[in-house]
Image (cartoon, rainbow, N blue to C red):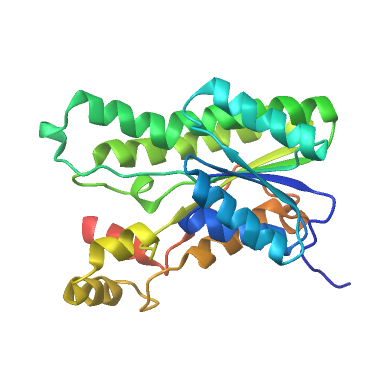
Length: 261
């Protein structure tokens, strides 16, 4: 028996699909054959990714939306159904970490991190699950967590709390929606070379190198590393897997746990 990842006749929504991990996820799902709905707050980013997908022979549509707003989430879902007739995959990619000591953290920073990293995941998952239940098809929802939600997150407690919340939400939804065969899983990145991190490290090669050496696999992760894990959860290769969290971090989490111990 041979196995390959085939997503032909599947429709995938990628929330935050215009940059970084989201862009890589949109492209890898499209390469596997999925029809893509690329969601981003920036019009140019979403359209650029859609053009890349079309250039490789795929089908895609951009949706400009802020998924922190339930009405705009509904617009995303309606566009997917109107354009492609169904929804099979949802990848919740958006995430943004604030940095502040917990004792000094303003209330608005806490609230912003919880909405940006956790609430939108619930809003998108709820809206897509309603369609999946109605269409009576198998579905897969993949969230992006973080190892910061699995260990201590000094100086970004709100982000860590939100990402830990994603783990809890993933498990709850997996159990609640299993009867509909909607699988819910999470990919938890470690130190990744996203465009934002590349910008932050610009001009600081010593910090870049010091962090690389702390990772047991001796390299930073790439956006493609995360996208490949999302592809696995989105595909039938993980058909009997739900409620799980897989770390994609070069074993960095375990070095952190050892330090805490």
